[in-house]
Length: 341
Image (cartoon, rainbow, N blue to C red; front, top):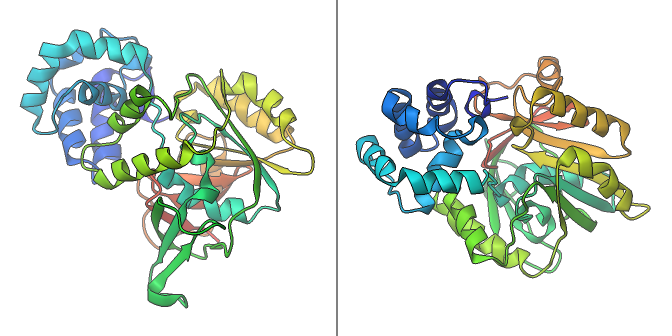
């Protein structure tokens, strides 16, 4: 579990870890805010009024921005937070971090397309279900060092033509880039509190969860919401460990059932992560996990046995694993993919 999401870690340390590992190089604003809070006992005391599971930086920052906090320097944010803390606290208590980044489909697609179809896909921690439409987005893979494809790019579109959502991803390593979309015949999700793409309030929360400088992600989110509104997908409310077996049983006969998730298991305690991993081993499914390096039981140990990348592995990198075996390193929002071979 990442320190920033671990309710057992002191608040100041959670924010320091978020600044140094997750926000650095990704959001200068969030790095400043998190580092400022880590060194500000008065603001830590405010946040400590929340239950431990609600003190995570992503949640507090997103709640503040939903309510009007402006990206900028830490002193101005700290003053705003003190003035509006009562509203921020209520928002934290009634919301959860449910980042629904369609860009993550870019790192999942090669693994999905390599599986024998047709596919029945189930996302746990599905939020509003935007990652349940990987076959309805267009992809632009940029290959490091050039390639046989023109311009060092590999484009892939849905079967009915280019999508208004174009996902860009830089790739290295022997990535099995697909020549056609996977044949997805059924899709469903599970979430503790599903969000509704038809709800303006839910979409506003999804936008607030996007980090301040990531304007491209905001534009992509809006386009993906428009795509998702064209096809209703069932997202079952409830705990992933309690719901997954019944949902797998509902998948159509003859389809390869794929259970996948990104940045979800970090919010479970160790016992529940182990329980879920055991379910994935027992059920007749292909299990595709895209999580922080120490999150999925056993995956980090197996990474040491995989072909090493030629560059140091960033601490923020996720490991993409198929049935518990590492197959790639990914940028958490889907911006890059390094295939391990």
